[in-house]
Amino acid sequence: MAKSQYIVEFGGLSVGVHDFEFELDDKFFKNIENSEIGRASINVDAALTKQNNLLNMHFTIYGTVGVECDRCLKDFDLPIEAEEELVIKYGNPNDSNDEILVIPEGETQFDVSQYLYEYIALALPARRVPCEVDAKQFECDWEMRDKIEKLSPETEEKEKENNPLWEQLNKIKKFNQN
Image 1 (cartoon, one colour):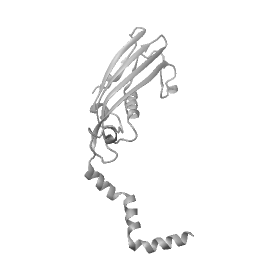
Image 2: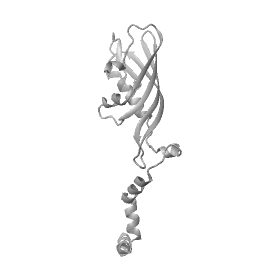
Image 3: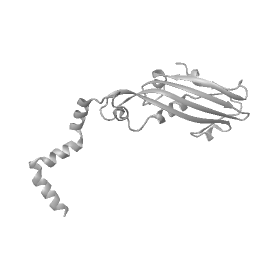
């Protein structure tokens, strides 16, 4: 993958709307340092609106990202969709923020790869349990869930509470709290 694939050259473009397409796959995410995404197939349609001193880029992102189920650790392809806006203007690059990219005066191109990665990472839900979304298509690995549940601290606490050997210690513990 050539990094230039994600560089948008706007210097020779006329004022108006211009369309770009990007395809992001596993190679793209492997080149991003500390990427939490390893497997993906994502398409990005970008519409660049060029004005005299301002550029506005609208991204439409859709595809799938390979993630693990939070409940059973089974790999699955999570469908994602997102729409994002990026405003590009001239000035001091140190004034850039999440929504506005500031580029030096006279610049004729910019790299959107980092923005694409961030937009996709933000499109991923915090909780990834596919069987809650579509139980017919995604089935949890019940064997793994049982193993995880047996190892969880809550299960150990329940076993201690039900164990008669701990009963006397729990009485002492309650007495000392009073």
